[in-house]
Image (cartoon, rainbow over all chains, first blue to last red; front, side, top):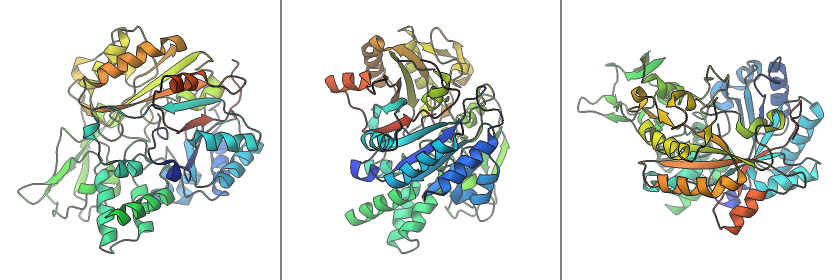
Length: 208
Length: 241
């Protein structure tokens, strides 16, 4: 379940991409954790996430705020996506102070994330490192499209949908912001970064 | 379990086509949308997101072994053995509580079919068998391990081999000194499969903050992404290392 590990792209666009997830260890600290997940989501919401969700319910763009908040369970995995380190740091600080006892994992550029952790007095405990993509790479779509679709680690965001959104933007059928939101909908967990998607779509538009 | 179908009420508007992550939907000679049964990984992204104007996308009962496609595609469904939703396990996400990966150990997760290509389970078996030859022990709670008829050889059940899934993740743990051998085996088998995979490593940082495997990767000039996941150690009760 490595859904925020293999996000591809330039360091520049990754520097606005910090998904946070909160999870319980099943059978160890999951009992009676549903209200803690709700509390974690409430904290995440205070710090300007561009997307959020619960793997058991869905993301904000498809389900809306209330259903995501009110349906947390003992095996929820809740997420929020931040686009700058200040919001990330403030959220992590508040999650620590809330002392929920749940595990918290931050994705993003290691150098930036570790610097943020140091700043607020936290340390990296364990890491998940991506060795890139191996095998028959000729089967992959263009890198620019992958930079968008890999923001849904379960790959529910189709490369064809990215192309469709680009085409619709060009024909003034949808705004860049609207296209990013539409792309975020199939990503059940709510880890798709809409701001980064907007930037990437704009870059692609500028090239064509 | 259910399978996706497009009924005769389809008006051929093409709205569903771009939503399919597998590119499995196309318009046929009858000017209606059709699903390529081989490519379809039963993820229901079209059903859930395309807003078909005539509700022509429906779900029907899905039998074994095709039902494995849905198990590995439907994100929010937990696996009954682990109670964990998704395609893998908690891996390093709860390492601060479980202590699953200790200093000196490396957890591997081989995200087969990712990003977005999909994987025939025959190809997944090539990888699991190549790894099993090195004596690795597969994570018992991983959903793919449950499909193995022989965990020592990495052989999957014969009745699932013709199925295709969006992705599946062989997971196992090794000692640090075994890394070169596993790396070489993965490089070799990556040339024998008709798909891609994304390998990931799970490690515990040392008390002084160092990460030996990163030093090794740098020394050997092995590519790794500058971004990844960091468990910040807030889980309780804290595992003892």
